[in-house]
Length: 222
Image (spheres, rainbow, N blue to C red):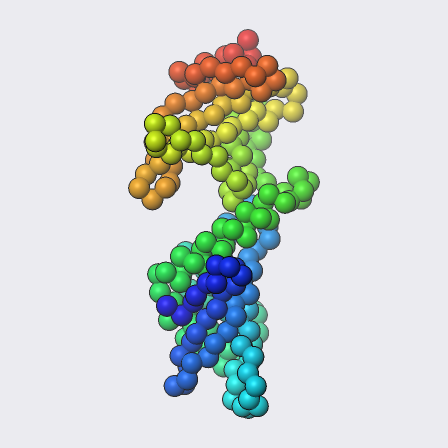
């Protein structure tokens, strides 16, 4: 693998074979700061390691932008890139192995989570289905609004489950209830099957099992 992570310093380094020599860089990783954007793109600013020599052929700083899902270069349309830098970016991408992509995706998720949890509410340009919220009482889950926000998990009987918290967003609704949907996880740790749903009144601190979502809606508008 050409990428390695120093867990103590949280820094990432790259060693790239280029023109018969090994070029070593520190990788500064950045992502789109928009908390609701799911572009899956990371930008790597590659800073060559310092050397005491005055070698005129010593590598200069590079920049590589990668779509982690499509596993392709993702420079912005119209961005001016020299042929040398573009050739290097292609070389860099061609040498990435699956473990490298996993490392980059971990950093991507971590950075997106930081942006999501620190974003001011007024700065989040979320897309809501206003008609369904107003007319059908559609509930909206926290992670539907902030896909990279913190997620909740619970351990039951030695097994871990995800908790999907859904809220009423009708501006004039006086309810203080929410639904917690308990989801089983598959082998990859992804939500796979709904186990049950719990109605929680966070004002009265009361809860009850929801047999069907219609039960919850009837109780809200009763």
